[in-house]
Length: 62
Length: 370
Image 1: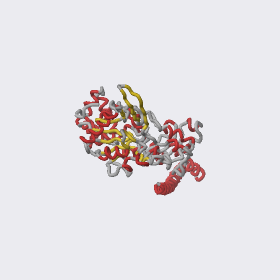
Image 2: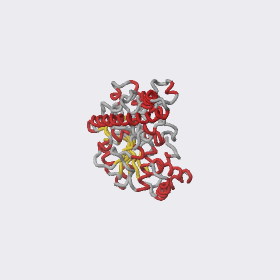
Image 3: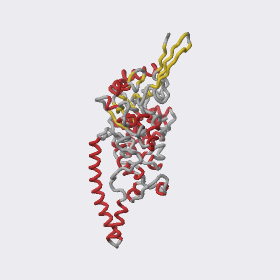
Image 4: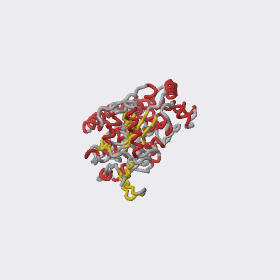
């Protein structure tokens, strides 16, 4: 079974990887993965709630 | 993308940028670089004749805010100019190819233009757990940075994340995020911090290199002095209110509506170095302080932890409201206006000197903690 991997997927924000299994010209199974993690949820834990928006707004700058 | 044999002006012209706008752009670059107007013809000549250098734009742990900063910029059409001043061969957000095709473009430049191309990096590099927290094409960010930045003529770190880790490295720094220079040793680099970076500062750095063949003068943090040599506090349009002791005490109070100083709300302008008050954002319309929000020193190292809490007043900034104090003392001590002015000046100088000493001491201590 041929496996197709597209990594990086461009023209998006962030990092994305797509893997697909092709059988007879049809995709029978596929996976997508975000390949970057910063742990922002852990960074905001215990901080002054008033500054959390400044940090969370940096999850995506688009 | 244009062929690299084209000159920069050819490229701009083909995109419909007029000669007039081109000259205006060169003049604005000269101003941003703090050069005299006599440098404008040199910049014009360089951009007219020089070939575009190859560039690779890498994305690691980032939010694409720095890319947005450039794509949304203008003056005139900086989006075109930045994307055209260099032959941008790889940029994940805007390139057409994906997957293998994209990776091939990257390798071609690294192989064929070794030590000649510019690497522009957005985002930090996670070094914890073997670097698994950021991978592209099956390779870790660290691996890619070693190859691409290690073989580049120069690396431009755009945005605070690639300079020193930025928001990804805020405590407890879950992924061990660091800046590029900390991850890849021995590279030649320029730091252009900010959250996000200001497109004009990137463009001006490249224009400086194309015109004079050298990088602009850098400070001890590898930041160009033209952009990071001055304190925000010293160029702030709210500064007279600081000196006069007119502070915003609460969000939306009368002082806030009148545009008074934001120091009491936690403004870190007195510790932050950047040219925000002069070049501003959104085509020179405004910047955070002008819009009524305190500066939180986004372009400073560890701004999320060392300079915080963001909405708490920074301690012992020299000179807060001493003009008002001096006025009161002056009026009480002497009756005559002339004498009051003289006393005011003397007290101001004396207090300024004492506060400066105190501030320098505190800064040294803060540096030690870092």
